[in-house]
Amino acid sequence: MSQPGYSEKVMDHFMNPRNVGVIEDPDGYGKVGNPTCGDVMEMFIRVKDDRIEDIKFRTFGCGAAIATSSMTTEMALGKTVEEGMKITRQDVAGELGGLPPNKMHCSNLAADALHMAIEDYRNRAAGQKG
Image (cartoon, helix red, strand yellow):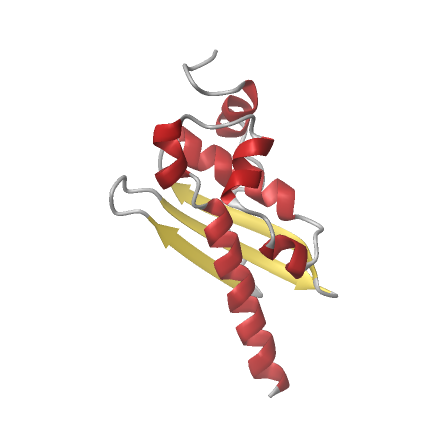
Protein backbone atom coordinates (compact mmCIF):
# COMPACT_ATOMS: atom_id res chain seq x y z
CA MET A 1 0.00 0.00 0.00
CA SER A 2 1.74 3.16 -1.11
CA GLN A 3 0.63 6.73 -1.45
CA PRO A 4 2.01 9.13 -4.06
CA GLY A 5 4.94 11.05 -2.59
CA TYR A 6 5.27 8.86 0.50
CA SER A 7 8.14 6.41 0.92
CA GLU A 8 7.66 2.89 2.26
CA LYS A 9 9.33 4.03 5.48
CA VAL A 10 6.81 6.86 5.94
CA MET A 11 3.96 4.42 5.42
CA ASP A 12 5.52 1.92 7.86
CA HIS A 13 5.88 4.54 10.60
CA PHE A 14 2.33 5.75 9.92
CA MET A 15 0.80 2.27 9.99
CA ASN A 16 3.04 0.99 12.83
CA PRO A 17 4.09 4.02 14.87
CA ARG A 18 6.76 3.48 17.50
CA ASN A 19 6.77 4.91 21.03
CA VAL A 20 3.16 6.10 21.08
CA GLY A 21 1.84 7.11 24.47
CA VAL A 22 2.43 9.27 27.49
CA ILE A 23 5.14 9.23 30.14
CA GLU A 24 3.61 10.14 33.47
CA ASP A 25 5.66 12.81 35.28
CA PRO A 26 8.14 13.17 32.41
CA ASP A 27 11.52 14.82 32.84
CA GLY A 28 10.68 16.96 29.80
CA TYR A 29 7.54 17.80 27.84
CA GLY A 30 7.08 19.61 24.55
CA LYS A 31 3.95 20.49 22.59
CA VAL A 32 3.82 22.12 19.17
CA GLY A 33 1.07 22.77 16.70
CA ASN A 34 0.45 24.32 13.33
CA PRO A 35 -2.79 26.30 13.11
CA THR A 36 -2.72 26.16 9.29
CA CYS A 37 -3.14 22.39 9.05
CA GLY A 38 -4.24 21.51 12.57
CA ASP A 39 -1.38 19.12 13.42
CA VAL A 40 -0.58 18.96 17.14
CA MET A 41 2.31 16.95 18.59
CA GLU A 42 3.26 16.21 22.17
CA MET A 43 6.63 14.73 23.13
CA PHE A 44 7.49 13.26 26.54
CA ILE A 45 11.04 12.32 27.59
CA ARG A 46 12.66 10.54 30.50
CA VAL A 47 16.34 11.34 30.96
CA LYS A 48 18.95 9.39 32.91
CA ASP A 49 22.64 10.27 33.04
CA ASP A 50 22.06 12.94 30.35
CA ARG A 51 20.63 10.35 27.91
CA ILE A 52 17.09 10.09 26.59
CA GLU A 53 16.18 6.82 28.28
CA ASP A 54 12.52 6.80 27.24
CA ILE A 55 10.47 8.87 24.82
CA LYS A 56 6.79 8.83 23.89
CA PHE A 57 4.57 10.94 21.66
CA ARG A 58 0.95 11.77 20.96
CA THR A 59 0.08 13.30 17.63
CA PHE A 60 -3.16 14.59 16.21
CA GLY A 61 -2.63 15.00 12.50
CA CYS A 62 -2.13 13.42 9.13
CA GLY A 63 -0.12 10.30 8.30
CA ALA A 64 3.04 12.31 7.68
CA ALA A 65 2.71 13.97 11.11
CA ILE A 66 2.40 10.57 12.79
CA ALA A 67 5.31 9.14 10.79
CA THR A 68 7.63 12.06 11.60
CA SER A 69 6.73 11.83 15.29
CA SER A 70 7.45 8.11 15.32
CA MET A 71 10.76 8.53 13.46
CA THR A 72 11.86 11.37 15.75
CA THR A 73 11.38 9.19 18.81
CA GLU A 74 13.38 6.39 17.18
CA MET A 75 16.20 8.80 16.31
CA ALA A 76 16.31 10.36 19.80
CA LEU A 77 16.05 7.25 21.97
CA GLY A 78 19.39 6.54 23.66
CA LYS A 79 20.97 9.79 22.51
CA THR A 80 22.34 12.42 24.86
CA VAL A 81 20.17 15.49 25.28
CA GLU A 82 22.77 17.46 23.31
CA GLU A 83 22.58 14.97 20.43
CA GLY A 84 18.78 15.17 20.60
CA MET A 85 18.93 18.96 20.22
CA LYS A 86 20.87 18.49 16.97
CA ILE A 87 18.11 16.42 15.30
CA THR A 88 16.54 18.65 12.64
CA ARG A 89 13.35 18.50 10.60
CA GLN A 90 15.54 17.74 7.58
CA ASP A 91 17.24 14.86 9.43
CA VAL A 92 13.84 13.32 10.22
CA ALA A 93 12.56 13.73 6.66
CA GLY A 94 15.80 12.26 5.33
CA GLU A 95 15.55 9.22 7.59
CA LEU A 96 12.02 8.67 6.31
CA GLY A 97 13.17 8.79 2.69
CA GLY A 98 11.72 12.26 2.15
CA LEU A 99 8.33 13.90 2.44
CA PRO A 100 6.20 15.60 -0.19
CA PRO A 101 7.00 19.34 -0.27
CA ASN A 102 3.46 20.25 0.80
CA LYS A 103 3.92 18.15 3.97
CA MET A 104 7.32 19.45 5.09
CA HIS A 105 6.15 22.72 6.66
CA CYS A 106 3.25 21.49 8.78
CA SER A 107 3.77 17.79 9.35
CA ASN A 108 7.40 17.70 10.34
CA LEU A 109 7.08 19.53 13.64
CA ALA A 110 8.24 16.52 15.63
CA ALA A 111 11.86 17.70 15.89
CA ASP A 112 10.53 20.99 17.28
CA ALA A 113 8.49 19.09 19.90
CA LEU A 114 11.60 17.10 20.84
CA HIS A 115 13.65 20.29 21.22
CA MET A 116 10.90 21.78 23.37
CA ALA A 117 10.86 18.70 25.61
CA ILE A 118 14.66 18.88 25.99
CA GLU A 119 14.50 22.59 26.82
CA ASP A 120 11.79 21.82 29.40
CA TYR A 121 14.04 19.12 30.87
CA ARG A 122 16.98 21.52 31.03
CA ASN A 123 14.87 24.22 32.70
CA ARG A 124 13.57 21.74 35.27
CA ALA A 125 17.08 20.39 35.94
CA ALA A 126 18.45 23.93 36.36
CA GLY A 127 15.63 24.72 38.79
CA GLN A 128 16.44 21.64 40.85
CA LYS A 129 20.14 22.53 41.03
CA GLY A 130 19.53 26.20 41.83
